[in-house]
Length: 435
Image 1 (cartoon, helix red, strand yellow):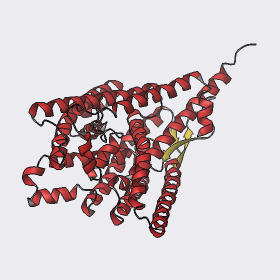
Image 2 (cartoon, helix red, strand yellow):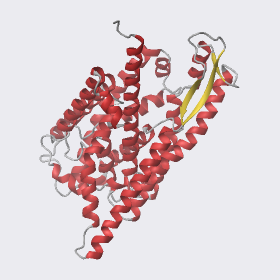
Image 3 (spheres, helix red, strand yellow):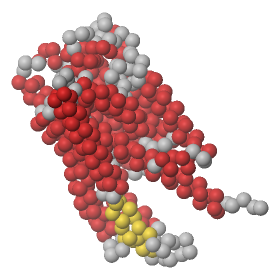
Image 4 (cartoon, one colour):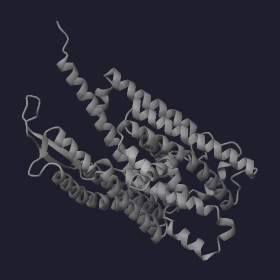
């Protein structure tokens, strides 16, 4: 990876992409340090270990920690994406029609996603602000009132839309998927404070026994993290190669061609979807904290959407599994894949073109998604269980989710750098300057 980055910096176009990405990340981190007017960010220190605060801080790229302009991050946008994609499954005819219109339809769906992001961002920002203000003994909002909440809601919604725009700019002119890169940068930025928190939690005694036991536990956590990183990297790079043959051999047809399908087709998107999806009900429940905290239905719902409970962890893993299957078929549409292979005059070896290819790829995606969902669920589950067993901070419990995101985005960026470098080498080979 380091050699790839070093070689990439030698090429002007790639260097411009890297510098542009870094510039946008610096702007985002500066915005994540500016607290919203009228808010006492110190009140969040009491809620830093809660499940909702940890989830939102992870998926906001660390913006919630200071209750900054980017406190909501891109979480509303991710939720809006989930909703729009679900509505394309023969639920809203207009969305189904747009999904079949190519580039024009994609632009219309993106516009609908952004409008829904504004609505979700405004509602979610007001709900979270009011909920955190009710939960903390030190008031989060200095002068609570309708006008104050509306102002904070507008500021946070504008911050979400600006963060989404920056993510699009990274995707277009930078490196990697912009939204994921913003989350990646926030996780990396929060790692030193997470290490410090783990140290403070474990090194509590002054005696040598307590000190060495704490150091031993931290060493064990570090070793476990390294093993998980190695395992995640291995699985994320594993792929199933389907041999492709051509009915009409031409000079441009490759002799040995194959269609690569990742073992984990969905990548890390299902984990981000599940985290964003489970935070929405928690936001709504916070609005009823003051008036219905003693009601049975409220306690049951709170337990279901709490990542520190068995029910909450089970729901979280279930959502990851469901979204893994769902997003695999979004990433690889078997019908379109079979159609494109036919148009190219090619077919998968041993599989009938057309309907046969569609059925074969669908069955293969189901098998790959089964393995992928078990992998994502396991990596997300182990840190959560360890956090609950050893009574660690919830932010450490979400470490599996953070590791998945960090490793996946790092691999994607490295893959893109390799692709751009190789493309540059091929262009230089084909268009060799004359002597």
